[in-house]
Image (cartoon, rainbow over all chains, first blue to last red):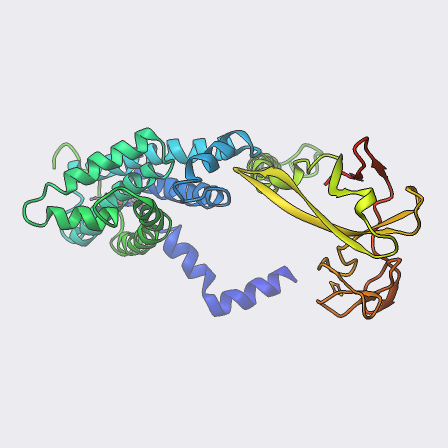
Length: 219
Length: 166
Ligand code: HEM
Ligand code: FES
């Protein structure tokens, strides 16, 4: 019975080819540094899942953001765990993605034919930083408020365009309810959507080109 | 190895993987479910004696007289006020001879209104009709209007009703 269902699906989906193509592809001799991309992917999924859970209670409004997080920490069963994982996972993800970038640089894996993989990777790194930047404001406590004040002020110091950039980031000249709301939208919709798209392109290119050989002493 | 009753390597790996996988799933799944259903497990408002805001002597005889009260409760990060209401019907001058009905329709929870000309309570949602005693006369409600059976009059003559948990 299961066999029949499997065969039916396989005939239409090509499960076998998918499996060999994605999971059973030939690789050069393994190296732990080459697992950092997969680790980044895992952390991204972890952040997505815990983030979705946080939105069940979190409210992006100046009157309630702080209280709703207080409630998650003290009122909701395992709220401390979900928030804790999202909080530490965020820091870890920036770190892991950055080390992954460094390893690709050090092993010179960005060379032909993988320049595009590298470029998309740069996009992934910037988006990951963007997630950290927008997520930091959401607790709406003193640290979040002033850190974002300072960071948007720095963005505002760009010559000529600075004032405009600052207003776009803040949704006006002050840090306000509009700032919190647009950071929230960026954090849960815009940046994750871009990240997801870039990750697919990144993975497609990796599967297409295969993993680069780890440089030997002679190289 | 085959024919012996020792467990084969293949089966051992299968069972161990299954067991460990199961433990991990439970360890992640239980907190996840707990997190989602958490508010459903918290207690509702406590039972209490609630003044209906009227003195017994001011309530006319034999006329359903509306009253309302609100109860507040902390839900998450906010205090929620919920309004409740009903009708007091003094059947005679005897201070014990009182019928207190809830105005919450027993069908799906809309608020019924007293229509003196029809001598009926009418629910605007699905047109249910209840008699002055709360008995269903017409429409979908499965049972009569609820009653506040416990009530008392304090020293100043205020009428109080006993409200249950939730
Ligand atoms: C969200 C962040 C990222 C995810 C989920 C991700 C995912 C992956 C995965 C799964 C691999 C294959 C395994 C590996 O080589 O480690 C990989 C390889 C690669 N990544 Fe990333 N990556 C991310 C960020 C970046 C960044 C920031 C760069 C560089 C700017 C980059 C450049 C590359 C390149 C060039 C390869 C191919 C390496 C090779 O073939 O040896 N990636 N990535
Ligand atoms: S809710 Fe009153 S009739 Fe349906």
